[in-house]
Every structure is written in structure tokens, then in C-alpha cells.
Length: 196
Image 1 (cartoon, rainbow, N blue to C red):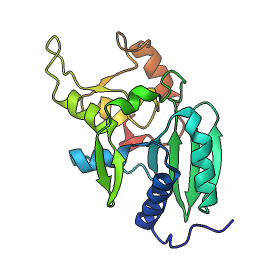
Image 2 (image 1 turned 180 degrees about the horizontal axis):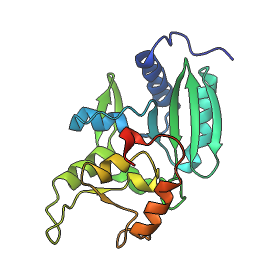
Image 3 (image 1 turned 90 degrees about the horizontal axis):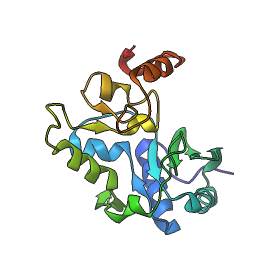
Image 4 (image 1 turned 180 degrees about the vertical axis):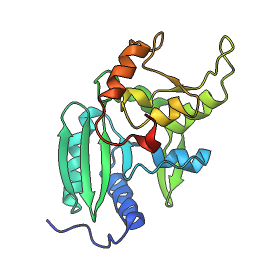
């Protein structure tokens, strides 16, 4: 199937992807690119992350396929992808460890906004705003990084250099520092900004 018409660079890809999502009528939330707009923190994720309910994933994949994107259900328990012109949309409907499925609560307090002149919702940004305004708890920084629940690698920079607490650690999570160290040591390939 041919790629969607007009995809020549990342910006045209994002526009085509967002138009496809808006036409599908499916509720979705934005990910890392929203963080840069609101916080000024740029994280090159090399893709566009969107969050949908698990029951909406099949319809979203069908909408992307109809628009000319290559699609795949990468991991049936949490992740699908749509690709065109060398760019990727990650369609996330749960966490990689399966403990945080996207549900109605994710959308309940979502913030409406615009990206590339298209309407989108920003639940993650609202959560970020709440956490960055949180006061210290017992003298510790109250900022909590839940990204480590999604990826054992991508958010190491946040917890190891930027001072965020790791949501995998007790009491929020179920892991010890030794568990996390063992899991991090098992990562193959380079880590973000060489955090090892």
C-alpha cells in the first residue's frame, strides 16, 4: 500500500497522523512532544506517542491503514505502530508491564489543546503540572517519574540526572533498588546519554 500522500518530513508525517486520528473519531492523548511544548524539555523520542483505550486500538490501526500507513500490532498486550516515510506513531494502550491499561480515568481530566493547529488532549501535561507544583514530601523532592513503568530504559535520565523519584520503587511501586539495578544492567545497547 502506498504511503500517505505528502509525507516528505517529520512535520508532514505528524500532520497526516493527527489528521487521521481526528478523522477516526477516537479519543487519544499525546505523549512526549507535548512535554516539550509545555516544559521546554526536549526529548527526541524519534516517534509520535499517542495513548488510546485498548478497545480503540483496532479501529485506530484500521484508520491508519486506510490512510496508507503501514500498521502492526507490535505487542498485543500494550503497543501498536503506524509507519510512513521513515516515521512512526506508537499507539500505546497499556504499560509494557501490563499494570496500567489506558482507561476512562486517563481521559477524565485531560486538557484540550492544539498541536499543529489540530485539537488534542493533554492529560499527561496536566499530571506533569500537578507533580512539578507538588511540595516536598518528608524533605524529599515530590516529583515522581511514572515513565519507568512504561520503559526500563527511556526514563533513566529523568531519575538518574534530573532528580525525579522512580515510580517502580517502594512505596509507590513494587521493586527494590537492587531489582532496578539488575534490570538496568541487563539493558542491551547504549543508554540515553550514557546513564550507565
